[in-house]
Image 1 (cartoon, rainbow, N blue to C red):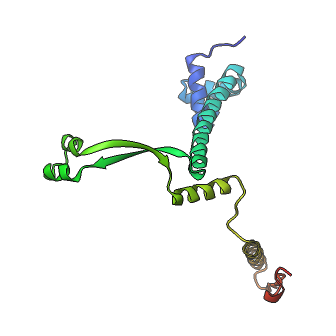
Image 2: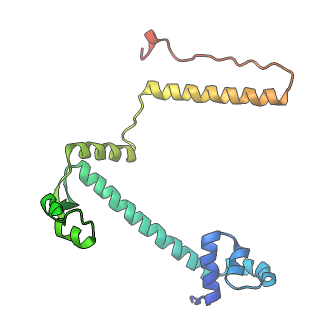
Image 3: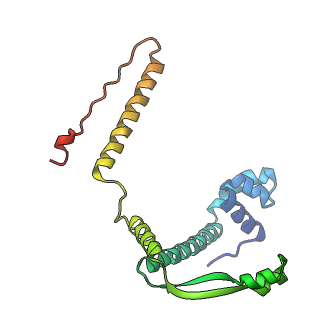
Length: 192
């Protein structure tokens, strides 16, 4: 049997979602400071409050997921060269000139119209969307194997330098030497 939350419990749950601070949420919900300290454990263990919080966060996740899905659908449609709906404002420059620089809403309504077309995206937009689609789906990497190897080498060198600095700061007067090794093949031996 599902218990209905009191207004104070609902307020606590909403405050807790915002702050993740049970004590402050209880105070904000109207509990006295002395009571809030003891009530937080009971409030957090209350199954009705727990279910309310799960439902609220689930709704947000669902809405965000639906919006992300819509964006992904549009990226895919553009990359596939499918028709998409485009909205734009068409300006009649002659009518605008007749308005004589009047920039009021009424004047703009005379020379501006909202237009909609349904056409495929330009080739440039399709290529950009396809590249983004492949990156998002993990099927396209910007870097070659050589570039990835160089990045790894740089990260190792940065780690060695950081380690040496840490040792130096802990051993004030002792010298620390950093030995760099190049374990990548020579230019003539690459991809051999």
